[in-house]
Amino acid sequence: MRNFLILILGLLPVATYAQTADPFLVVLGIAQDGGVPQAGTVMHPGWEDAAHRRLVVSLAVVDPITSERWLFEATPDFREQLHRLDTVFPVENSPGLSGVFVTHAHIGHYAGLMFLGHESMGARDVPVYAMPRMTTFLDSNGPWNQLVAYQNISLRPLADGISVRLNDRLSVTPIIVPHRQEFAEVVGFRIDGPSRSVLFIPDIDSWEEWDGAGVRIEDRIADVDVAYLDATFFSDGEIPGRDMSGFPHPFITHSMARFGGLSDEMRSRIRFIHLNHTNPALRPGSDARRTIRENGFRIAAEMEQVGL
Image 1: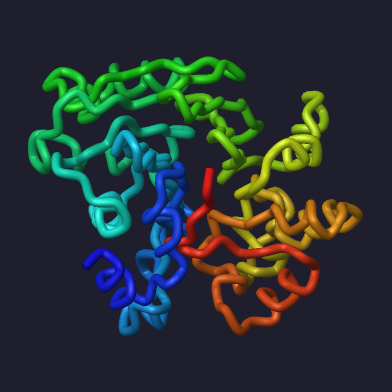
Image 2: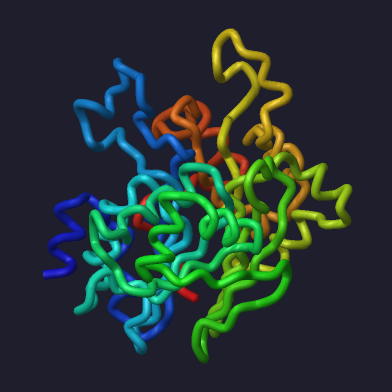
């Protein structure tokens, strides 16, 4: 029955790891915070054809042996993403989440916590892992502090570079990255399983700014098996009439140029994610997508799985 549901949704890549005992990661969304189509884009084909829609960036990690599931980012598309996770690996209790990891306080990454609250699921003590300023933000501002007061969520502060052991087979390490920090820190996550590891950096100002902090993204890529990296915009000029030179995200064209000297195998680890609705790489047949593929990189696909 599970495979049938997956097939009718057109989500063919997913029927692999969910049938084994190995932990795995599943991609639940690849879009920037506003989703695809974005509000106000009247002519976008996604309004008429679901094949053109993309959910806000989110991952899930599953351990089939313990039946534990962890969500990475609580997005505005939380409802559909939790349903997708249920089709891949259903559990008896709702919401069936052993924890939610949040990268930062921009709307696409934490707004979905509202669905755990009194007006929706009425969840009980779901662990929410976030950095100290982020946990303070949630605990000090409504409506989020109501989730804490009603014990819908339980805040679990993280520390930069300090791993959190999820169980005997899985761990997660937060990594501070340079990005707008109006309300909270911004992190990426390294996810380690018994056999493989994944890097998840949906938002960063630039790779060069990280260089200045003594961190080279190439070293991070070399140390994992798969790297999901910020690909919000494809190139300058993507948004007509706007000077994009100061936009706080690395263009895909810039990332490809920077990573062009890496080996074929290293480039194949990189999967671009967090695409803005204007990004031409969202379209499978586009010149942008073809250029990415020809240079040895990939665009993350919703419902793809990575064994851990």
